[in-house]
Length: 192
Image 1 (tube, rainbow, N blue to C red):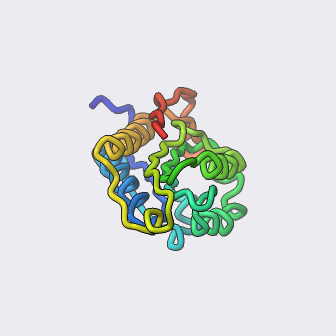
Image 2 (image 1 turned 90 degrees about the vertical axis):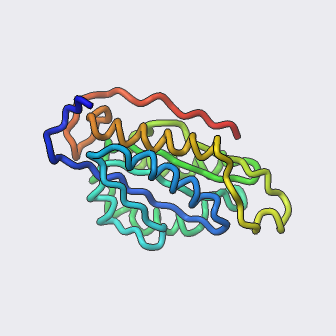
């Protein structure tokens, strides 16, 4: 592929997520599949309660996945951010990230919450948040297991591939990689 990395140099993509009804998990699995095609990127998915500050420090890039719950990010994602925020503050600046959100109607507040945390960490967004809307509006529909459609899963897979490829070839500036490039990968647009 003509990568600029030295042979054997591996980057780590940390994926932290929460999912109750399977929707966000499916989105994360698709993003992980997309990222896994890049041979120089190791993909490490963690459910939010299992991820630690050390995992963030060891990674070169991130995908954060959350359902939108009551117009906010999921509580377990908030708990993850609360527990890791200060231990990694000023230690992961410049690393790329992307956000995946599954919502019943409007994920803007959940996206804004993740963005504010990432801004505090001085992470670099590589795309706009990718939002999948399930239109679940009743308690039964909200709590029911969900199946994400193939078009939306493809968008998630493409986002994972774009982030992994950008990390691999050094497109994203990062204190860890000491890359000097200021380019970004084109955003994967939301249809929410």
